[in-house]
Length: 132
Image (cartoon, rainbow, N blue to C red):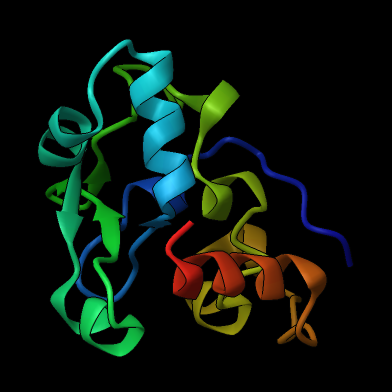
């Protein structure tokens, strides 16, 4: 079964300690460039350093901030305000990252099994641990 985003916003409104969106350095830089801001400003405004993952990776790892679970990039209509340049993890969908966990929470993920490791996941983690 192939996942297709319905733009329901559920995976963008249930962020917190368990569900996070990691933003690669390239993601953060792209957002800074598109918003004509400097990277440090973008990181402070929209991202939070994840101490646990930073320790594992041996470098700074950031995740998107949330307001009571709601992604800071969601607009008033519940749509992604940066969808044309959203982070890698968002671009490739919740079906690629922790699908069995999300299937417990989201109706749109019902029927998905843990997919075998894909090129998308390998590329994501390669970038994460390389600092790119």
